[in-house]
Length: 376
Image 1 (cartoon, rainbow, N blue to C red):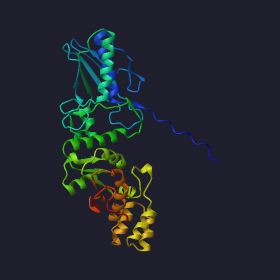
Image 2 (cartoon, rainbow, N blue to C red):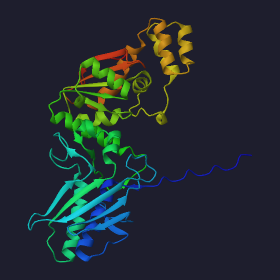
Image 3 (spheres, helix red, strand yellow):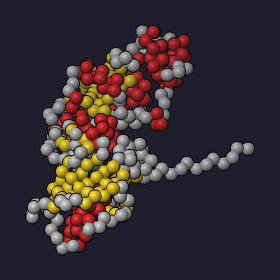
Image 4 (tube, one colour):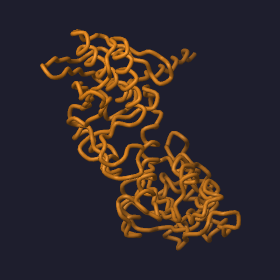
């Protein structure tokens, strides 16, 4: 008799860089006002919850105070997990209020289209609000005006930023200080979705009229070469084709290309808008049925149904002279187009093999209610 299965352990939540920066800033400002660093330091999150953070370091100099907090992202695979987030607080001139500065490891915004304008440190609006609220509360408690310069830095942030999409978004020199709730939900993929949205915003603000969302580096490089596209026009959508298209419906551009490998695009053709493997694999018998519809004989169709991989299935169809890629692209277009319906947008689907060769295409066509029927 099999023993009872152990329950899946609950994934641990963590804290955003914005929450860590707020805690560090509050601790440093408290020392300027009282001569003491609170440890742990408690902050209020945007949702009204309280959270306490232990200080990893603190320092008081003649002209400023600084404190640091180690970011704990919980069980989320966040590139900034374990990073030291620092805040340095320096008294400012009377009447200047709170001024934000980017310290080492925090980037500067250089392109329009983001929530923060060019020339500003990449400290997003909600973290700024959190920091401002924490410091103003302390200032009011001690009866002083909150005129300070807040410099946020992240140790090794320049290196960590190379593993993010900041460079493509026009954020140079380091990381962004992010967060809308202060809390990191494990595997929520919210950071990726956020990057997709901001990439679209930057492209639109830059006057880009043709965007391409790619599932990975291979398909991104291939579609870039196919259409001779600038980097700003490329959206690294990963598995989140649905998330990209839903945002594009309310933030449209004239032309959109979806590019991917044969397996991911076959999933899209079979009705999936989240292409991650955990959402399911390619239905090979269904793929075999499509292959039979477009001319593959019974033997090839049977072998496709039993193929080890989608790539092998495509090779079998190719050996029979069947344009399986074009058929899959046509069905993928039918899956994707309804998410853009109502927009003045033309949609294209392209498939590439492992070496970047174009193996399937559904050409640009409008996505409105009178769009060309692509059903195979």
